[in-house]
Image 1 (cartoon, rainbow, N blue to C red):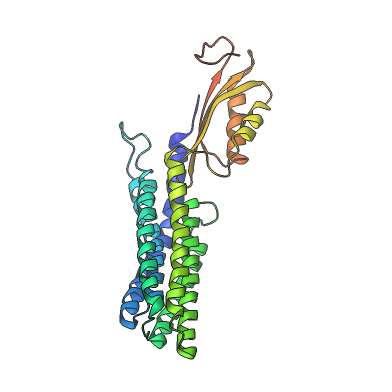
Image 2 (cartoon, rainbow, N blue to C red):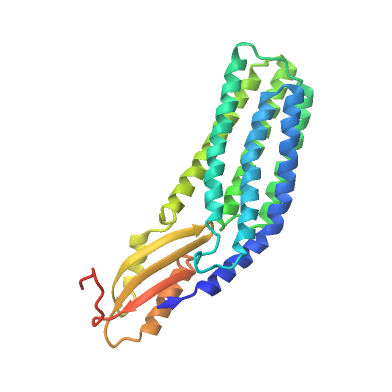
Length: 304
């Protein structure tokens, strides 16, 4: 039996601590601009700004959830919660995805009401606020790229992509503002709003789909269980690998377990170390539990 739980969880926590600074700065910037666009939309009567602020709410929630998860993860596991509180991030993300559907529905409903009689919008002020939002999104994205692990950490990558989506929403608000300012096309405001709402729905669906997949103990998207099984069975001295499971505890923390039947007379520690190295180096799985078995072991439900 190979156990790396304590060592790997500590390594995981160290990586999350390194992401904390970037998340906090990005959260402050995103929240500030979200409030600016929300109240700016109310003042200018721009649904495009209001819808973009709704999109930014998804990013604010995503960043906040990451920070809350880091705080919960610092709590030690207990006898009743052996994995600690890592799954809190997934439950919160599921709730966040559902609320995003409500926000999108509200935006689309308001946009439909405005199609027949588009109200006058203070386009000049709207353009200024949207430009500030675009600049803030660019700064947040750069901070996350520089200080956070947006390449390998799924949660951080998701937050980064949300901010990029916000930047696109700000661009949409800018375009709508220019069309209204130059041509007086106030219909552009609800049209852009619907497009931003659809962008929110896309993000919300991705959050829901990924959250449910993790809660159902689904394999990580990039993991091929059959390929991993064949790779482990190719180790010299290994006869078969069975009861193989790969699942995600939370974003960036995958777990692996299996039973490995080896040839009698072989050194199980050498084979175990090879398997651990392969999982770590080839598949980036560090949290592993492998049970080594030989022919004299009676394992119910399995026939050699």
